Amino acid sequence: MLVFLLVFVVVLAVLGGVHWYVWRRLVRDVTARGSVTRRLGTAAAVVLPLLSIAALVSARAGAPFWLEQTVAWPGYLWLALLLYMTLALLVGEAVRPLLRRWLESRAAGRTAGDAPAEEPADSVRTASPVGGAPRAAAAGGPGPAAPGRLAPAGIDDDPSGTTTAVADAAVGDAAVGDAAVGDAAGAGRPDAGPSRDARAHDAPASGPEGRAAGATPVSRRLFVSRVVGGAAAAAAVGTVGYGTYGVMRGPRVKRVTVPLAKVPRAAHGYRIAVVSDIHLGPVLGRAHSRRIVDAINATQPDLIAVVGDLVDGTVENLGPAAEPLAQLRARHGSFFVTGNHEYFSGADAWVDHVRELGLRPLRNERVEIAAGFDLAGVDDIAGESEGQGPDFAAALGDRDRAKAAVLLAHQPVVVHDAVRHGVDLQLSGHTHGGQLWPGNFLADLANPTVAGLERYGDTQLYVSRGAGAWGPPVRVGAPSDITVVQLASKQA
Image (cartoon, rainbow, N blue to C red; front, side, top):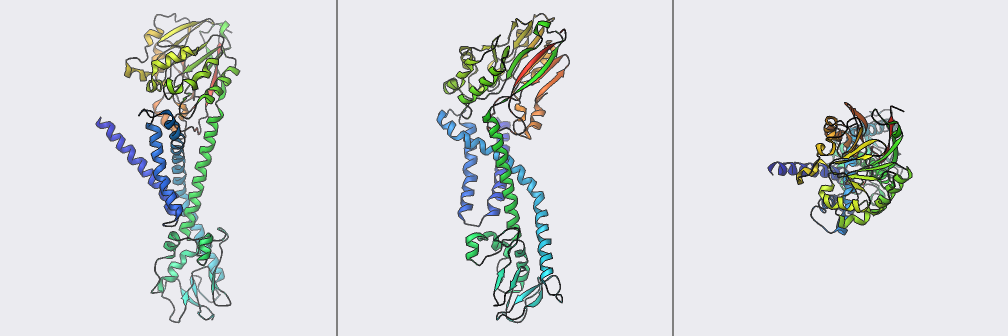
């Protein structure tokens, strides 16, 4: 219990730090103090993580299903947006000094080009209060003795004796970059007050407010913060939007040929449609299961294998969403094994329900397929907490090892047990292929295979990326799939 509390505190601290960092870069650094925009951004930075927590705990807390559905979309999507905003902002930290340096060099070059030939290049000019000729003063030095005031770099005298801001081509209405020089230029005035950078950050600097106040230039720091923050937000929204579209569109069909030495000639070309991790829940419902059923049936498989994590919820809430599974069609039937999420949702109830829908559960048992091989299935290892779990001896003991054996097991990690029991091919899911990059690197640490086909001794393991998504309905770098595994006989 103490370890759990320690982990919880660490995770909470990390999430708090990440949210503070994102708020700082996307709200505080780019808005005026006290503005409506800053208030709204701060409110969002508080409400969105609360919705994410509600989405994660509502099902476990027994909340009404309508409430789960209400908080799921914004809560889960915010988690995905937070991930990619953070990654993009971290990349922006490297870009930020480069952009500021470019703006400074550009402003310095323009100032030097505008200065009279007899004046030093690093000087700024003062404007005569009566329209007289400007006098030179070293930047950062004391102001001139004669009446008048320093003009920031980029502010030129006009014939009438007034000053106007020179628009920077990079930012349109707001003069960007030159304003920072105003700090140095104003240092000689007793009433200089706060630096121009500080004033530009906490007061409207562009747009109607800025123009009404005399077209105050935007500081370099504020401009760079807005450019980097805006680019990071756009990249995150685009990434999450495309990843959401991929999930809601439905999985694509993959085809993989697996040669098996023990498969008879009669089973050459035998097609097994493998689908895992459908994750019906408060986000993915009946329409999602209908898309999956239509995609599977279109492949005209000989056998269908549903290898766990069908649902994230109870039969009471999600029974109607699973009903399209009754329309699955295959010559030798449809089979089901439990995944870890079934044990969060009432595994026994779901096993009974999928049996009613026409799927045959394989709970540590096997059947002989007419094509000439054994099909076995084991419960997920999460069932061990309920006294169930995988029993390889029950599923694979006392069988004829001269025949090929295909095993359905939700988690790839049990492949070593499959090797010991002479399994020829194991079909699994669970990993989602990482689902959200760079999650694939974490998934690789916990699983022997994250996605695809690999060999372990005499056993081949195929891992599907899954047909749905857990948590955020988003996939990045790990598109959802249904795989048609075609057995190839070496005797053919």
